[in-house]
Image (tube, rainbow, N blue to C red):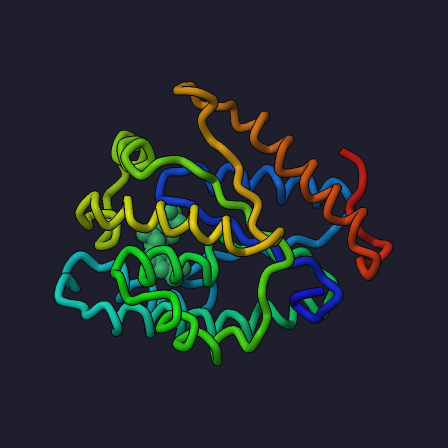
Length: 229
Ligand code: TYD
């Protein structure tokens, strides 16, 4: 297994407003109904120190933050989360579901900020120490629709969300490119069907089916895995 542990490590990716929160909740509930312990985390954050880094990153007053500073702060939050929460949880056989992981840095800092993939990879090398998710779901919703949804929710917008649309469009294009080059790890899930939005239940069923299929093809996966549907 890619994470080198007994547990299962799943990340969710996509533009702000693509529906990750709902899908993470539904997948967590399903795993729990199958008797698995689920640890649900978010990036940046998920630890005491990481939440402080999150505040720095998302604070609208920090408009002057350099792209490299931003990239390193995301990596620092990730390093803390990886060592103090993710690895212990995986060693304890939990299902770790992370709202964003290193692919966010590739998409937003690599493509959005145009730092390039190699710079982002090098900055994150020590943070993740070779531990990648077993599965990543990319909720594919174009940047304009996701931002419109996010704004319609009426919630306050943070420093990243207040970036120009070109930044969000580059991040979305970046995700698509990562999907094309990451082999089977990243599963693209279309949020729209034509110009209609799929129901959360429909999207959740596709995600569950993919998890079940992955488990069947993973000989090393432990017998305590969630099965059924
Ligand atoms: P958050 O409110 O958690 O966004 P969402 O609810 O959409 O996940 O804010 C996280 C923001 O940080 C989001 O705009 C994406 C950005 N981000 C990066 O730019 N790089 C990263 O490595 C990560 C993890 C997030």
